[in-house]
Every structure is written in C-alpha cells, then in structure tokens.
Length: 215
Image 1 (cartoon, rainbow, N blue to C red):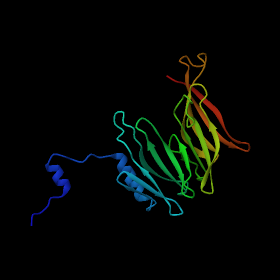
Image 2: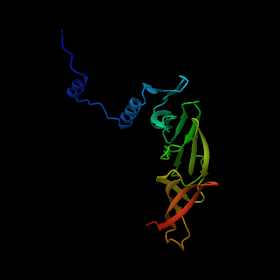
Image 3: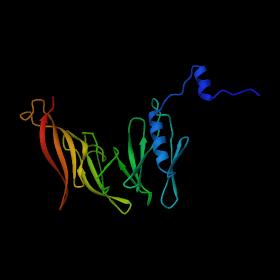
Image 4: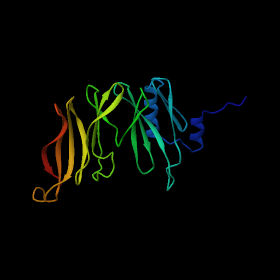
C-alpha cells in the first residue's frame, strides 16, 4: 500500500503554503470559547438562542472589485453571555450586530461596544465626524433582562469625532473628542478634548475637560 504524505508536507514540497488568515483564526478561537453557542460551517455562521432556535448568517459575494457582498464574522459574547456580537461587512463598510440570546432582537452599532465594569451598560463611539449616519456619534445602552435600552445618544455637531478611552467606573466613561474650534483658540482650528460621559440623577451627559490644540 502506498503511504500518503501529510497535506502540509505535500503543500510544502509543491511550493504552495496555505495563507494565514488572522481574522479566521481570531474567529476560530472565539467559536471554541462559545461552548457550542456559535458555530461555523463553511460560509454559514449559526448562533443558538436560549430557546434553542438558531439564527443563520450566510456569506455572499466575494467583496472584490465592484462585487456586492455580505460577510459575517462571529465576535464573541457580551454582558455575561446575554448577547452575541456579529460583524457584518459589505466590502467598503459594515457594522456590528448585538443580538439578544433571549429574543434574537438585533441592535446595530458602528463599532464593537465596551461594557461597564459591572456589565450593566454598553457604549461605543464612532470616529465619523460627519454625523450623516444614525450610527455616528456616541451611543450607550443599559442591559435590562436580556435586552438593551438606549439611554444616551450624541450625534456629531459640526466637525467632531469621538473615541472611547476606558470606563473609569460604572458611572463614568472617558473619551477623546477631536473637533474643530475657533482659530482664536487654536491656530489650525483643531483640538483634542478630554470628555467624560457621566451618569447622574437626571441621566447621562457629556462634560468637556482639558483641551490641547492639534499639531
């Protein structure tokens, strides 16, 4: 009987080596950590709700040239495994879906959300400064019985974009705001401003802090 060479050795001897795909490897690690709640079969991603119902996401198109496409990547679990996070790419753009394991309801975000230390809140900030899309700006939800309730939204005003630094505590998010300012304040009219998103008795609000003119 002829002995068969291992596939890796065959590829090596033929001068052909498989390409390393860091995104696919990242997803494989997260799928293994899901304990069977999320699985992939070729171009199809499936996630299992608490009821046992499965939601399927199927990749379409090649995302090359002018070809339209939809590519779904599993990005893990949020808020003590109450939600799935799935990235959807369209070729030139995309978004993230936060999906309730309780109901299957989907909440759209421009970036992966960051959760508070106690897991009660989720927040993200979009770098877009135009404010032309409903996902732009700063968005914060409260986790309530397996669903999300929007507690704060701030769309960009003029030319400004936000990025999240970290949660200082369960009531404070530290952000950076890059914004256009008066030329009498900064010669080039742009500045980096430290911002706090604060939870107070009346709700959440943004408070500007130190400002440094951009170079």
